[in-house]
Length: 138
Image (cartoon, rainbow, N blue to C red; front, side, top):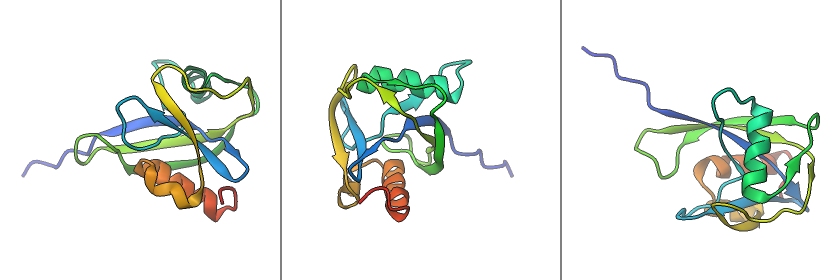
C-alpha cells in the first residue's frame, strides 16, 4: 500500500497590527474573505525581511527593524486552495512608520473586532480568536 502523501502546506508570514481593540485586515482583489497583511517569503528572505516587504507592498508602511515580536504560528485549512491544503501562518507584530493605506493588489482595509471574525479567512479567524482570548481584540 502506497503511503498517503502529506497535504500541501503554504508557508505564510503575517503582520499583526491591532488598534483600539481591532485587527487590521485587508481585502485582496478577487478574494471573498479578509486576510491580514502578509504573504509568502521569497527565496533567501528572513521572516523579518519578508513581513517588511509584504507590509510595504500591501499597506504602504515600513516596519521598524528590531521591533518584531512573534505572536503565534497558526496551522489551518487554506482558504480558496485545493482541498486538503493547509496554511502555516507565522504572525509578528512590529512598529511601523507611515500611514496605513491599501496598495498593489489590496482593494480595501478593515479593522476587525471579534464579532466580525466570520468575514475572515480560516487562519485569520483563528488569529482573531487567539487575540480575543489574550484580551487584545475586543
